[in-house]
Image (cartoon, rainbow over all chains, first blue to last red; front, side, top):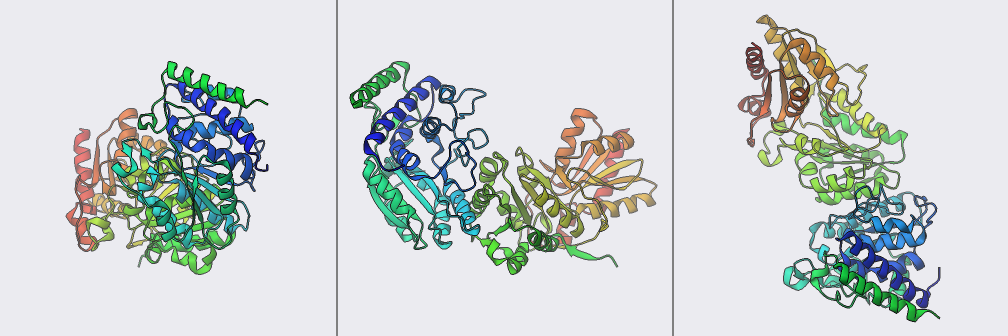
Amino acid sequence: MKFDEGFLKRKTAELRLDIVEMITKAGSGHPGGSLSAIDLLAVLYYCVMNIKPGDPKWDGRDRFILSKGHAAPAIYSILSDMGFFPKEELSNLRQIGSILQGHPDMQRVPGIDMSTGSLGQGLSIAVGMAIAGKLDKKDYGVYALLGDGELQEGQVWEAAMAAAHYKLDNLMIAVDNNGLQIDGSLEEVMNPYPIEGKFRAFGWNTRLIDGHNFGEIFDAWTWARSSSDGKPSAIIAKTVKGKGVYFMENVVGFHGKAPTKEEGRDASVKLKDTLDKMKP
Amino acid sequence: MTELKATRDAYGEALVEIGKNNNDVVVLDADLSASTKTAKFREHFPDRFFNVGVAEQNLINIAAGLSTCGKTVFASSFALFVTGRPWEQIRNTVAYSNLNVKIVASHGGISVGADGSSHQSLEDIAIMRVIPNMRVIVPCDANESRNAVLAAAATPGPFYIRLGREKVPMITGSGNKFKVGKAEVLRDGKDVTVIACGIMVDAALRAADILKKDGVEASVIDMHTIKPIDTETIMKYAGKTGCVVTAEEHSIIGGLGAAVCEFLSENHPVPVYRIGTRDCFGQSGEPASLLKKYNMTPENICEGVKKAIKMKK
């Protein structure tokens, strides 16, 4: 699909509504990091990646790894909207017997390419998939979304080193740089900055963007995908935790806490208003 | 004289054998390929060999990623580092999603010798066995090592195969029909059952010879697969002999002995005496001296047998 800003605006408002409603219904989950990442993911899934919802295991598909697995509601909202599984399943998030586990499970959910949840592992997995693509001379791309707090895991840098070493220009990541982790701001807890400088020092192409500006996001993903200089690409996307729900924005407490029923209802009403205003 | 060969040497050769027949076999190592013998595969198939450097967590997850793209992946390092350092990567990524990753470790056990405790893995069987979906194999000789590696390549899903550093005698014949989860009964005696794995199978056979002179007839079972363990054979021989001795080059906590006890205590309680390290670390030394120091010799097995038989009465 081509880039369509109007479509993305409406779509991400719908997806935000799904995210808030499913987490509110579940009574637990990670709204902050799902809402900060949803714009990056929506552009990737609707406008960039080559995938087939009717054939989730298609051999030639682009791969995606949600390394920050706690943003599961974001990816679930997109996959159900695209038809990988019925939308009704969203209301079973985190319930016993549901395919929608608290963190993504590739064995249960069509369209999930790797089970994640434990931080720091996704980039290494992406390296493995990208090596396989090179070995098999296939032209699929491997995408991953990392959290910024996750960069504190040493394994991320083992993988960053390997991706450049093996010249994996078929590997593209975005770092959802919302600046907050469970215990506080990144700078307070363990400062990972400068993130862009670190990836560049590891031999990557890098780009800093506004992670809520659809044009910049689209340009960055397509720039990363077109790389053929042997370097993997890292997009450092400045985002707002809880983006789009006014009482969650930049509130660290909403990292891993569901809104109350009242808060959830309030957020839903406001998001629906936003959607109504977008109707032509 | 008995042929001596290290199980890790058989691994390197088996990889080449598999690699010739299957282009989807990929081998990874973490800077120990000369020791783990994966270097042999690299010589033949340099394009399908990846050295990730000293980075075991990355090793396991790169293997995981490759496996989802149709590759049969072998990932190797020393037993301690390839199970301990990336345990959670193995648990959460490889095993949870039942991925086709074969973790093959060299340098298991105390017979690693001079490198000392930091390199002597005495807990790896325990920490691999506890993970759902994981199969755990400890071959007793080079022939069984080859067979285990071939079987792992042919069976989808995660495996942990633990090999040793030292050359060991050939016990099983080349015509041996290795089957994952099916123990080999090497001796059939009525008084006690000695269940062993790895280099302790040879020690168990030697112990059986010594015991025979004292009029004690021991069954000796080569329990190469610790998980899924062959409960049928354990049941049959525990029933027949009424007591069991286990022998492993590993802590008695969590390993083969523990697995045997877990099964017997719920199904057919009989006295069991476990040979292995008893909640302690090793140290530098010659392999033979270390096995003696930590009570893992044929003579120690004989003492264990006497204890077990005594408990029967």
